[in-house]
Length: 229
Ligand SMILES: COc1ccc2nc(C(=O)O)sc2c1
Image 1 (cartoon, rainbow, N blue to C red):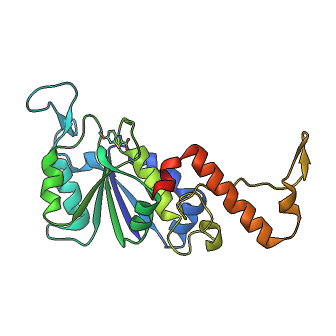
Image 2: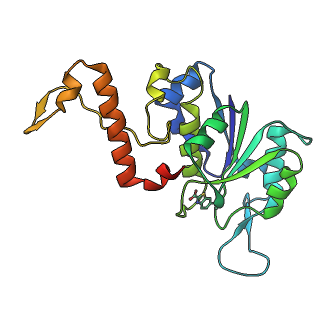
């Protein structure tokens, strides 16, 4: 998987060199490149924003630098890459979307700042490639970088070979539409709290049944709407 990120804070993504995704990058499973949007400006101040037409508070990101940056990544014709634009106006990010992103050969993330990116950038590239506006949730961040980091981690870990034991992906929250069951490890007793006896029984059928019951109970309490599907 090739991942390109366009941002005014490219060093924000240096953290991707750590841990699982760092190993995935070193092994060539995932190739991540962060591009500085200001490298595609031509004025002394490397300007990327301007005042909004129609008035209003804040600034809007100018289309020209975005056009030059995205053309440098996907060329000036049609592209099979998927352009993801994090936005409070986007579709809510879910594990299902993470799986969809994980199946892509080439992801391009456009990190907005200020009041967002001039709408014509999305309109222009929608005529040449698939474009998805995605939001992390019903709250507003200061820019797209945190959302992109979350999406890269959620999708990247689903890329075959990135996580050592693919079995560990199966029983996670949201993988089967339920929240995950509670987990325990040694010691069997800690500060007066014991591990549920069924987990020490060696009865794998009973353990599986208990874990599923825990998933359903937890989901019903915390996210009942997930049970409506
Ligand atoms: C200007 O770019 C932004 C601003 C806020 C924001 N909030 C997001 C979210 O997913 O909550 S993505 C995003 C992008």
